[in-house]
Every structure is written in C-alpha cells, then in structure tokens.
Length: 115
Length: 107
Image 1 (spheres, rainbow over the protein chains, first blue to last red):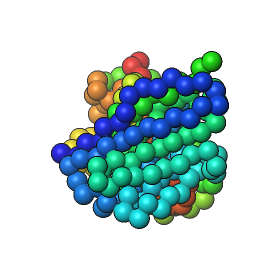
Image 2 (image 1 turned 90 degrees about the horizontal axis):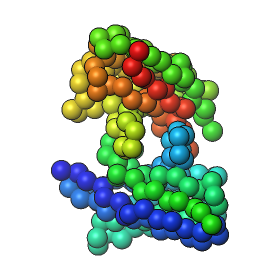
Image 3 (image 1 turned 90 degrees about the vertical axis):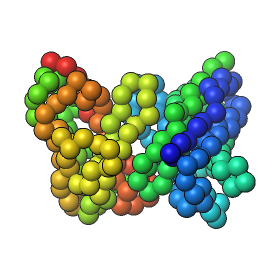
Image 4 (image 1 turned 180 degrees about the vertical axis):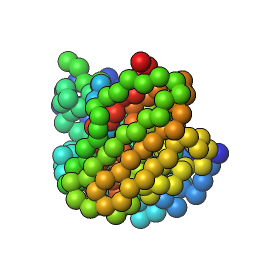
C-alpha cells in the first residue's frame, strides 16, 4: 500500500535551517510529483511547492522562493524540503502529498521555531 | 493567484442532517477542484477530485458538483465520523490554492 513517512518533529532557532524528509513506498516513486503543504497552528492549508521526482525539477510558492529547496534521492524513494532563515511564523506542520491529486499524505512534521 | 472562498466559515449540524458546503473560485477553473477532509491532528484526506469524482474508499454519502467558478460538496446524511474541517483546492493553475476551510461540528 502507498505510504509516505515523514521525519520527526524539529525545534529550531530563528535564522536556522530545517530539512524535512518524506520516504515513499508502495508505488513507483518517479511516477508522480510530490507536493509540500504547510499548516500553521489553527490555520488552513498552504502550498509550499512541488518537485518532479523523476527530473528533480521544482516549482516553489513565490512566498518561499529563495528560502526553500526541494530535492529527492531516487535510490531511497525520498524527497526533502529544506527551509532556511527560519522565522517564528514558520512554525507549522509540514506535509508531503503525492501527485496531482494529493491522494496520499505523510503524517506531517511539526517544525517549531523558538528562541 | 486564484483565490478560493468557502462558505459558510463554520456550521453546526446533527447526525443525519444533509450538509452542503460551497467553494467559489476567483476565476474559472473548469473542474480542477478537489475536496479534502481534515480531522484534528491528522493529515488531510482526499474525498473528491475533478469536482465530482469520488476518491476510492470514500463513502457514497459524499458528493461533489460544479464547474467554472462555483462548486459544492454535499454530505447526504451526516455521520459522527464526518465532524471535521473541509477544504477545497484548485489545481487549474500554479500555485494550487486552498479555501480557508469549513469546520463542521456537532449541534
């Protein structure tokens, strides 16, 4: 069965970087895009960007352009999202979601930015 | 960016009620519209894609309709497990955008 398993919660200081991973299984990893979506505490869903897992091409939200980098390692069916220059308002749960339909989601990774 | 607006912002309903949530796009998105359900502390779950197609495994009491700018999610007979927040999302253009969500709670 399709599974997306994300890395564990992180606590970071303002200005630091965080790298979240999402390991896929149960389907052909390079057959679909992977989105990253975030959700601040008590707020709605916000798209961060996506990566073409076959080519490595990426498209990022203008809001995060310059601070976010998405990569993938096809040998271990894993995508990564790195967010730099963290601010307090980057505190959120970050989700990976498969493909154009976002039909499968990871369990979410809480990133807390705190001094 | 395409703005997605959901209404109402929240609603209270009883088990057995028929519930309708609407989603309006700021420009035409054809039928590039999905609906997600999210329960507290959980990841969103895809319910409907392409405006009216039921995702595999989703109960048939959920249905979607609409095209262009106006869309509807209907729960025909609300069940206890349906109390959650519902989001629409357009995938017509990049960036994909979500509505603000509609919380459905117990009356």
